[in-house]
Image 1: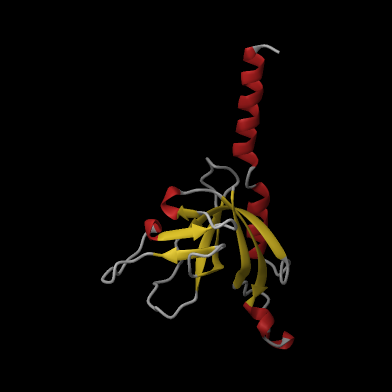
Image 2 (image 1 turned 45 degrees about the horizontal axis):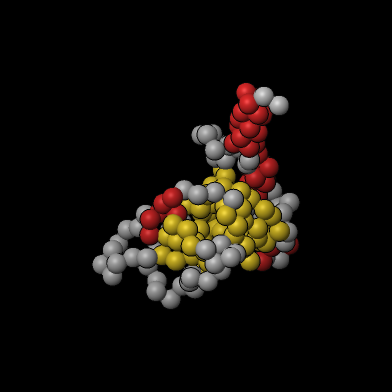
Length: 165
């Protein structure tokens, strides 16, 4: 095999991995936000953690509902965001820490660290890709069936495992 052929094969494989890595995750994320198809099921998504959509104010919290962003490819501007990936607060496996100064009122990604299933620490400001698995639960399923709204897809993903992608 010629060196040029080998380079072409490697370049093709690399570009395919960039442009197809998140298509399934994007489709799952869309369904999570528009149907109850995944209620009680475990889903797997590949993407990046993002800062949560809330102001952290309680020192009593034991979990943080992190945001998670999936894209069809690394270069794509299209994205889907899931807002309630519930992670335990702490430096254990499959958890998150929020490092704030005592007088600090606002946070950025650099204040968050996630720990994968091996206990490895990753700062979210690095925008690294992760594969997560977790169980889906929609809040509507806590209500009696007659009281459920068919269009409220507020949910949480719990029992999350994190793997560096």
